[in-house]
Length: 217
Image (cartoon, rainbow, N blue to C red; front, side, top):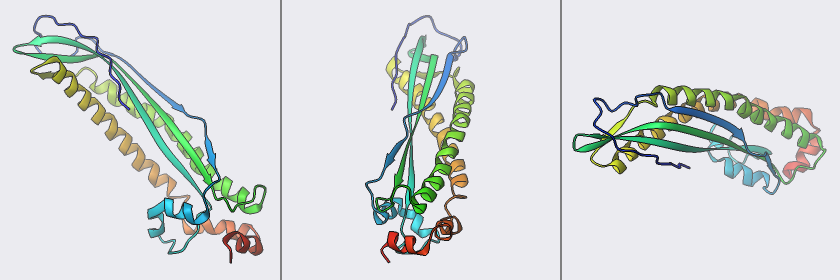
């Protein structure tokens, strides 16, 4: 989600399209309330997980849990304008970024609360939740560093609207690239928890009878 506030004033031409002073930059990272969903079956969770089935788990596998992650990014801008020849130069006077982490822990409907498999699955998914929470401040730092480094850059165009739109695209694209690099790093760390050996720990921890009943064997 992108929002922009325009606080523009037109003055005499500037030699370069660069903010004369460092803009006010703020980056906030927050977590929305954690949600738990127990409405999906093991097979429905496996279908939702999609590509995980191609990572050595084989066909017909059952998913007991899955943590879904989404990040909402809102950007609030303030702009200054100067006349640049026959066009306009836009620079930032404010860049405020808010990143909100949303987590949904899905636990299979077949899991009985309090059972060995339920507790083991909860503990496994908690590892993913903990990792997301651990890395959120790192994302905040990465975005802040990138925005600080680029915030004085300006954009020129034939009209004020085109100049601010260009500036918006550049900053939004920069933040998206930072987010993608962060997502790639998280994926590598999450993969440590999502292996056949990790999933087999539940079968080893809980009784064979409970596992057979859980999976309908």
